[in-house]
Length: 246
Image (cartoon, rainbow, N blue to C red; front, side, top):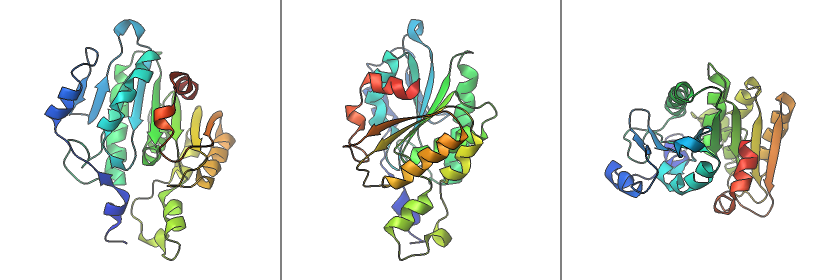
């Protein structure tokens, strides 16, 4: 497990920048691929712009697969910035927790500076991306306006221990994404979405993180009782996204 944990934890898919740009040809003016800061950026009409949402995706696929959701965010007036990890999408390299968080912090600082005050900058993470977003929120020089965690967990160590109970995973794992250690360092508002039938990380770890969030500050919950780890996202309405973001 120690030698193969990178393959177990990270399951990237790749594509070219030209293919991505072709898929973005119908997006609003100003949208594009920021190869310097490793992100796909979609811009709402300037007259509707009200802030920035930075999205950190899960451990598989690539950021491109979340591009269709820009319609919800633009309808609410938000620029959507889809962060891409090393080794995913168009990018070379190997993903590691330290590398991903370092780049995520730089991406956040870049858009914090570019987003006019007092417009909000919201961090949104899904699954593994919740571990990235939580660390950015805890370590940023200027905290984000809100932290939104979609199907989160307390730590990869806990998730792995439940799946590989026969192994000493706490000794073996190099990347732990321990949100339970970082979340108390962020005092701003938090929204959490939990899936009642989460078969990937389980339901209890998200509920425990929810209680930890409530202990440290304002927290709201959106519970999808009948959904599993991934089935809820295509079903979410613009109004439900608004509930999470506001």
